[in-house]
Image 1 (cartoon, helix red, strand yellow):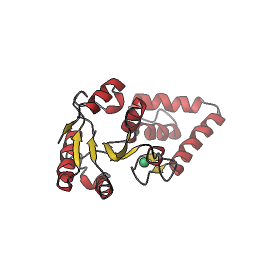
Image 2 (cartoon, rainbow, N blue to C red; image 1 turned 180 degrees about the vertical axis):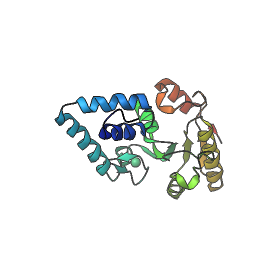
Image 3 (cartoon, protein in one colour; image 1 turned 60 degrees about the horizontal axis):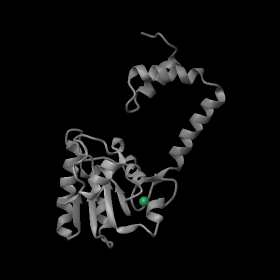
Image 4 (cartoon, rainbow, N blue to C red; image 1 turned 30 degrees about the vertical axis):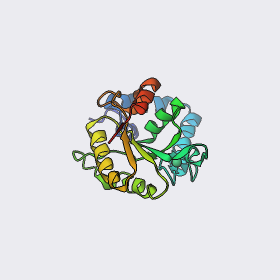
Length: 198
Ligand code: ZN
């Protein structure tokens, strides 16, 4: 049923394809955009295109950054021998907000999920193993406590153990299935302090 113009339909369709946006929200956003002043719409479109064109992976930890090396990796005061493995840049930001973690990170950009057909080669795992050739004392696995996160943690620990590098897992003070980004700082720090050997 073609209730709206073709252009609005197309806009709703694109918005609805974004994560966390259902068809109702997509419709609301589409009409909001149409009613916005032209210069605001232009600004939003430009910001999106500029972000896409300029944001890249840090060449060390693979987080999203505007530079060749992200501010955390570029900081000589950080402990570069301690690598915390997280699923995405949002999880890195959650730990950075605590201001208490002194190591560096490795961002996988996903987790292993046989159900969704996401295998070890679909995330930045090979890149993590390559980093272990440097001076690394400990790898802290801080993937989510979802099925995918746990599967990924097990896989990584099996991969790293033979190298002799210490592998730990953050404590499961983090609720099952909980995304790191929604958890408060105290819980995050407790999970880090209570990490156990794998
Ligand atoms: Zn980095």
